[in-house]
Image (cartoon, rainbow, N blue to C red; front, side, top):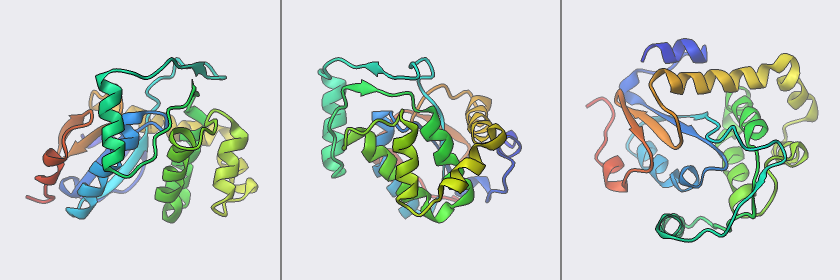
Length: 206
């Protein structure tokens, strides 16, 4: 797993203290996984959240989604209620690539803003019915946190933002991950939304 550091070109703490987390801003399981990440941070893990586009096949202008019914959606709604997260199923699934690319730039360049920006981008899709496939919507969200248009344009120059997104996705592929949410915890791959109890029993450096 040491190849992950090479792929991300970034210095990291020791592996046992890291919770690597791959997310997609339009993945409902990622949205409700905030409760798991909170547990990991409370337990002393250093959370590193990395973007991964779970559905690259979504067209640039998004796609219509049908009614969400059935046990899976009932589970997601229950998870959202338990985490006090508003959940209003959007009518369309946007292409999340632009939003993910800029979120990763915030993580790299404005780390003190990253958690709040990521939460706001999640809310745009799952609570506020805003189109995360719209560059204007994404840019305005970043600007609302004091990030300037000049900074956004600099991140987009020479495909830097999308190169960094590809590197983050490559780091997931190195360990066999193909979807979201996913974690590496204590050198173990953890795919999917596992129970809170599973995360609560994990401690770093043990």
